[in-house]
Length: 70
Image (cartoon, rainbow, N blue to C red):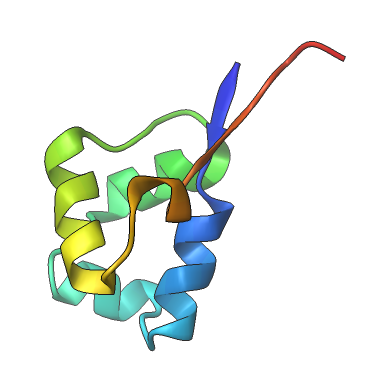
């Protein structure tokens, strides 16, 4: 099982956030950004709440579940 955050990165980009701005505004740290992109980490509910407020969206707008079963 895997949670993918491609939707979150797309939404951030469409709202003018690049990785530098994300780090500078302390939305996500570098370690978290790297882990999410590599599929080795995730974000906690506080960060999801912060992102939803910032981007005026719902959690399903940020991430999606992708099953490992083919």
